[in-house]
Amino acid sequence: MRWWVGGLALVPVALVLELLHAPPLAVLLAAAAALVPLAALLGRATEEVAAHTGPLVGGLLNSTLGNAAELIIALAALRAGLHELVKASISGSILGNLLLILGASLLVGGLRHGVQHFDAQLAGISATMMTLAVVLLLVPGLFTLGPTPVHGDAVEWMSIGLAVVLAVIYGLYLLFTLRRSGPVPEHAHVPASWPLRRGILLLVLATLGVVVMSEVLVGAVEPVVEATGISEFFLGVILVPLVGNVAEHFVAVQVAGRNQMDLSLGIAYGSSLQVALVVTPILIFASLLTSEPMSLVFNVYELVALLGAALVSTLIAVDGRSHWLEGAMLLAVYAGLGVGFFFLP
Image (cartoon, rainbow, N blue to C red; front, top):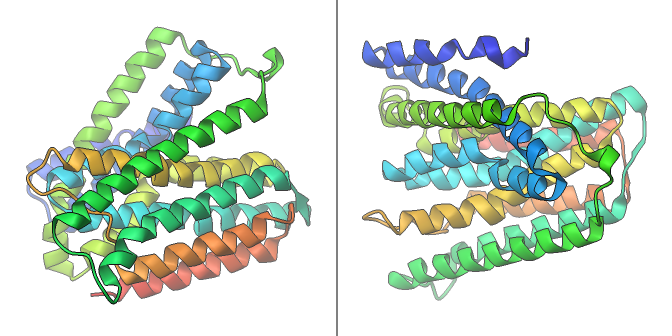
């Protein structure tokens, strides 16, 4: 039995606490804990459905739904008007993948196998694309915080334009990756363990569960902020990304421990790219349907942290080799940023 099967019992616990009007912090933590197995089930169901569709369509399906849980949580926060939480979850997810998960993977793999090697060209392409994505995400903030700042409707239109650019570059990245990879050998195709009908049913049920738990979690955010003094920004930059991606993160560390560094780096960089180039444009376009569209203006702390994380991870990727100390350094950077974000008012 997989670990997340038992964890699904947390879903009714969170619902009962919500109905009984339990303390907001208890509701928030219960909903966050329940989202972890739901996100794992959502990812597993996506993989099973993808296994029935063939390597090409399956790869696209996994790329599209790889961050579905986090996207659903962000959409719930967007509907509630919590723009700061949404933007913090975007930057927090990128930071978590590039620093926390990549760092943990390098640390675990390095402690078990010493110096590890991976495809420097492929990792370099992913790292360069990630740096490009971060630079694009920084543009609205730079132009609104600069000496001649942009204001008003121009910020909204700038954000929409950047969302289009992000979506286009992701499409080009997918095209390049598929052409570079070439046809997938039959033996590389992992057979499905579930029937297609079961995969689709569990995919739908997991999605509904994530939607419900996301509403519970988002509904508890403002009461928790008022009761504890923990900032909405900290919850978005640390808690939401961990909840939405913990299952995928566990896999990245696990395969690094098996000395499969190309796969581990692929998960870390791939998840970051999906957030920056897929999730972010979707959220911007979805916000246009609300009364108050969201901009892509991040605060100065996020701007510096994102740029630093992209540069540091790129330096690690370019030589095609890694060791445990590099992982420890990435984790140290993440921990330092976490401490700073916690005390940010």
